[in-house]
Each structure stands twice: as structure tokens, then as C-alpha cells.
Image 1: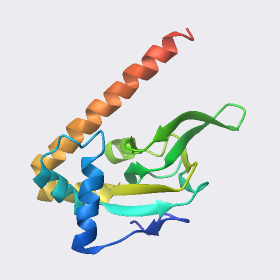
Image 2 (image 1 turned 60 degrees about the vertical axis):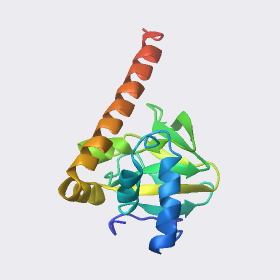
Image 3 (image 1 turned 90 degrees about the vertical axis):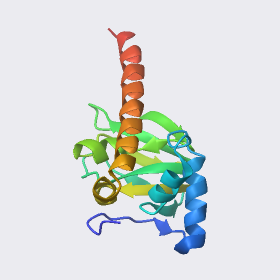
Image 4 (image 1 turned 120 degrees about the vertical axis):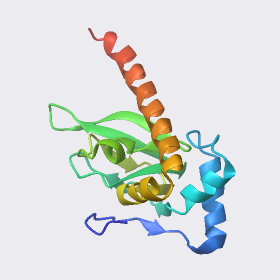
Length: 168
């Protein structure tokens, strides 16, 4: 975890080879990575950290530098966006098995929204630095991850475009 981030409320869940097996199982159960080969899941697990957060924990804030994405293993989080009135408005409630914060890994821009845990949750984090290591050390895996993230972002953009047309 990067030390430049205030990770208040984040509790590291475990380490070592026994816990790596648990991380592999968590990755394999996700919608995004379920079809990866087991060797790739094992490799990816070596770059991820597992954290537990309590309800009401701010996972990241709109406007912050984005240094990680996460796979929501257990629990749920809400994505909030600041409106023109200055208040936070819920965009979506995200349930387990989904990936959140992936845009910052790809484009390096500041967070476009705030993410808050609505209940106790378990998060598997992949930092931007660890993704950069995957690119260097396991380029084929990096391409698989990037391809999956590009497809996910494309699906989300199509969904938002469909919703937006209703307001035009």
C-alpha cells in the first residue's frame, strides 16, 4: 500500500502462502477474473493485498490521486459523485464480485467519484505500482488484465450512454 494515502479503517487480513491460497479463491470467484487460468490467478494473487473495512469507511475520495483498484470480495460499497449543489449523490451500489477504481490504474487521473463501504467489506487491492510490476514481470498476464478492464469499461460506457439518451 502506498504510504501517501490515508488508509483509515483498512485492516490487512493475512499474509503467507496459506493466505495466498485464499486470495486465489477470491480472485477465481470474481466475475472479472473467473475465466483466467489457475496459474494466472496464482500469479495475480502474488501482487494483491486483502483488506477488511468497516461500514462507513471511505475507500477513496473524489479528486484524490488514484493509486489502486479493488475487487470487492464481500460486502457492498456505494459510489458517490459530487453534484452541482455540492452534495454527494449515489451513482450506484456495488455488490461483491465486482471491480471498483480501475480507471485510475489505466489513466492515472484523479478519482472521478467517492467510494464508501455501506457494510463491513473485504477488498482485494491491486495498486498501480503492483500493476506496473506485472507489466514488467508477467507481460502476458498484464495484457489479459488490461483486456478485461478495457471490456469492463466499455460495457460501463455503453450502459451510461444508454441511460444518458433518456435525458436528451
